[in-house]
Each structure stands twice: as C-alpha cells, then as structure tokens.
Image (cartoon, rainbow, N blue to C red; front, top):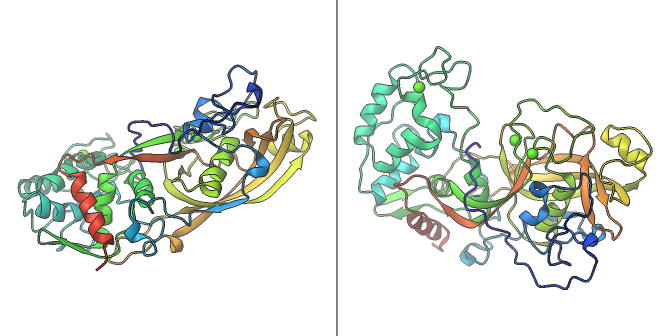
Length: 431
Ligand SMILES: [Ca+2]
Ligand SMILES: [Ca+2]
Ligand SMILES: [Ca+2]
C-alpha cells in the first residue's frame, strides 16, 4: 500500500497522433485528440489544474461526452502482445496479497514455518545462498537477537528485505522507534511505526496488469517456485515502476470540505471530470492499465481498476447542479466555461486483494465496486471540461489515478529483474 513510488515519469502510453488543429484553442482540451497542444490562458475558473490534466495520463484522448462509452471492462489483457503464450489461459488481471510489511513482505513464509519464503527460495536458486532453516517472529521480546542470528545465515536478498524494505527492520532493532514506550511491539502507532496497511500494492497493481499471472509452478536451478512465490517475486521486482499520475495525493487524516474550495485540492481531487475522461478512454475506448488510490484521505490503497459503468447521466440545470454540490443559487459559479451540466453516477469496479496459493486465481472472484456521484462540466462543443463531486461523495472518492508506463525494477539490490522475467516466462509456458 504505502511506498507508492513514482519513478521516471514518462508521458502517456499512447502516442500523440499528428492531427490537425481544426478548432479554436478555446475548444482544445489537454491531450485532446483533435488538437496538437493544450490551451493556455483561456480564463477558466476551477477547470482542472496541471495535476488533474488528463494529458498527463495519455495523449489522443476523446473528450466529446457523446462519444464516451457508458461502460467498459478490462477484457483484453494489456500484456497480450508481450506474452502471447498466456492469452486464453491467464485472466487479464490477477489478485494477490499485498504482502504486508508487518509480516515480512516477500520474505514471509506463507506456506508454513518450515517452507522457505519467496526471497529465501530466490537466494537458493540465484544467489548461491542456502539460507536459514528457521525464521524468527517478526517483532516482540528478543526479536533483535533472533534476527541478528537469522541475518548471519540468511541469503542477501532475504537479509536486505528484512532490514531495509518498508522499514521492516524497525520491528526488530531493539529501539523504540516511534517513542510510544514499547520496543519492537504494538503501541499507539503500529509496530514501532510499521503500519498494518503497508505493503506492496503499489507493485501488485501495475504488475497484475502488465504481466500475466503464473499458471503453474516452476523449478529453476533445483528450486521449485510455487505460483504464490513467483507472484511475490514479481511484486518485489515491480517496487520501482515508471508511471504517470492524475490528481494529487491527500495527506490529511480527516478531510474537511469548503463548498467554495477548488475541485483540484489534493483532498478534493481527483477532479471527477478528468476521472470521467480517463476512465472512459482507458477502459471503454482503449485497453490501458489503470490503478486507483481509492481512499480519499492519507491512506493509500492502490487497486487495479477493471471496469466502470455510468448508471446516470442526466443533463441538469444550474440550480440542480449547485444543490448536488452542496451550494445554493441558480447560477453555476464554479467552472464558468461550462455551458452544459450533467449529474452523473458512475460505478467503478476494482480488484481486491487475494491470498497466496499454489493455483492461479485470476481476478473475477475478487472484484468490488464503488459508486461516485458528481457534476460533469461540458463546454460549448460538447467536450468534458471539468467536474465537481456532489456533497454525498466528497469524502469518498478516488484520491488519484495512475498508470504504469512500462519500466519496472526491484529496490532490493540482490534481486535481478532478468531472473524474474525468466520465472514469468517459464510460469506461463505450455507444460
Ligand atoms: Ca524498533
Ligand atoms: Ca489516499
Ligand atoms: Ca487527491
């Protein structure tokens, strides 16, 4: 969950198609397929800002409301050209645990205390390190001494993970790191500061869309990697993923709303107009990977987005729109370039976490939904130009959306991405 890292920021997964700028600049929207450049200085108030500009996600976007599909689903895998051997076998996305940091992350012995963890198996197979027979409790009295002993026999990948990854080492270093009076144990702030929601969903979410789910166990260099092991190692290798991001990350525990505030504040966005454009383009018109942080507040719960459906899209007058937003009056005072207003309800389908196992689980049994309610702002040429959440949705909305752009590598210096790619290939190869 935490450790949402944006590496090298690349622009868009779709290339800008050279298209004639046949309309006036005022009609051009950021990343608009009809225009070559974004509009500047056209006097918008409360349209989307740079952070909420759909152009950061992709070029060649469709903005005409009439052209935007009412529903879309990730039925075609993003990886179909990279892993043709998995097409027809693996589902387009896969569920997985987020490998909680508090349980040791990818070094957790998920099959039981006597079966090596994914990283311990990796050390045996690729780092020539047999490792330790047992693994101590993650935290608690005596944890430091036990982990000091473990680290003397552990292989380099396992050792690095237990000391450095997502501050796991704080749980067994003999120090009261969060100053709450308990050493290496639960107190007022997780286990010495390590929170239960920390994990690698920032890696699971792009990985589960960019590479297929392993379909069977693989034996390599004498070590058998179960499907659950390979998925953990894939997550480890996706710890640093290049991506583009829409909306600002909210850092507040409690969100307070000002009806006069901007729709683009970090805790008020992602701007629902921008969300509408990206959702419909990424999942309705195209097949592009999409991840949401579905918690509007400071927590980050990244989930793969697999579908959406617009269940209401009614043109409304200004008074109705103002009321929906929680304001009063007969004049729409937010984005004054809006000539038409729509009240919209969208249901978004996303993948929830699953458990590690020895069989592929796909994602279809792990789908959940959220409903969003907002006013869509449409300009004189019928294009979406912004939006604002209705008051019943303003505390519960997507915080930000993001999309991986293709490059990924592990933070663990003792894990080689080439080995992980070999494991993936072998795990989807015909048997
Ligand atoms: Ca500690
Ligand atoms: Ca958040
Ligand atoms: Ca936000």
